[in-house]
Amino acid sequence: MVIGFLILVSLFTTIQAECNGGSSLCDMSYSDITQLITHDSYALSPNIAATQDYTIIDQLNDGVRGIKLTAVPSIDDPLQINLCHTFCRVLDAGPATETLNTIATWLEENPKEVVTIMWNNLNNFKATELAQVYESSDIMPMVFTHSIGDEWPTIQSMIDAGKRVVNFIDAEADSDQVPWLMDQFSRVFETPYDNTDIDAFNCNVDRIGDDLNPDDLMYVMNHFMYANIDLGTIKVQIPLRSKALITNSRESLTKHANNCTDIFQKKPSFIEVDFYTMGDALDVVAEMNGVTSVPLLSSRISVASRNVSSPVAPHAKLSPTDHVFIDNSLDSSGLQSHHRTYLSVVLMLFLSFSLIIRL
Ligand SMILES: *[C@@H]1O[C@H](CO)[C@@H](O)[C@H](O)[C@H]1NC(C)=O
Ligand SMILES: *[C@@H]1O[C@H](CO)[C@@H](O)[C@H](O)[C@H]1NC(C)=O
Image 1 (cartoon, rainbow, N blue to C red):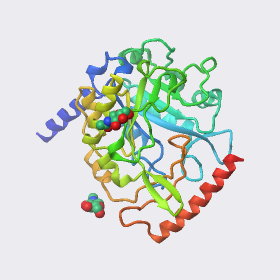
Image 2 (cartoon, rainbow, N blue to C red):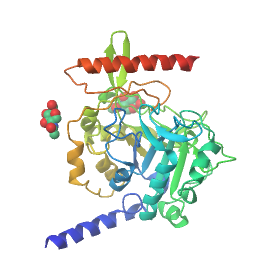
Image 3 (cartoon, helix red, strand yellow):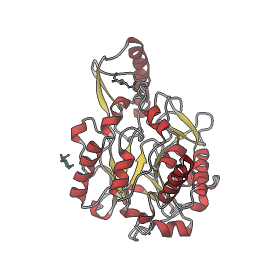
Image 4 (cartoon, protein in one colour):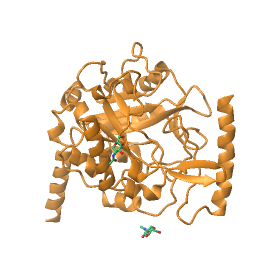
């Protein structure tokens, strides 16, 4: 009986696990489905700079289909591209090649899935430099190329062609030399990422290519939140992990998505969140696609609800990943003294870094 039930459950899961959420999506255009994307997918707890609790493999297994990566020169070899949260000394998730290989392995094991990678090219690597990273990984044969003006294909045709990795970059795209590493803001614009008030998520066009009409593009609905902290004259913005259950609640996500759908006359193609296991993000995305979501493993949920200290990031203006990180056990009780000390150290680092940037 129990075994029968387990077989049924696994059958059910298998049936769901295709075409990025369910078989009914196979014949839909890539641009007409909604996909969950994780903000700084590689930035894992318990590091103080974390924005996610689970590895990229867990994320993909759970139904996340969009991965955001940040390219930063490695400490040991500035020519090597690592995944770091602003500075490799704060959070270093290792060489980009390794993560691309990990994603490639997952794709080989899941032949009916399409994954999107969006690069934050914080240090303005050349497209050809990033291309070398792809070429030295197993993911290269799977990259998809879209030409501006063309219709986006169906998920099924991408699967049939074996071109199941869509790559966008926010700076330094080079359509002549590296056409598959596509300029994001010519194809996908974003709503603001700099949100500090749960009641003020909006649907403004924040980052888009010059002179482009949002009606012609897909969009990322950014739905993660920072909190303001006053430290004397200095203000920092931090993402409060303790608020993720509310930020990622059905109510908050649905309200935001309905507003953007009204304004742009089109559902978001991507919904981007922090700590995706907390709250209802996967369910909300499945419902928007008219499919049933696959339940998370119960162990994963209980770990996600644990009370660990939240990672935080003072928030700079350049890009969503251009932050410096500080320790965070901040809650209504305020700053404890060792946090205050830590904060001051990191802020000094931050300020001297700002100075270096200006120089
Ligand atoms: C919907 O989005 C618009 C445009 O960004 C914003 O002005 C408005 O406050 C939002 N409405 C709600 C109810 O969130
Ligand atoms: C986490 O902390 C909150 C507030 O301190 C408390 O209400 C809640 O029960 C705690 N949750 C767990 C899983 O310990």
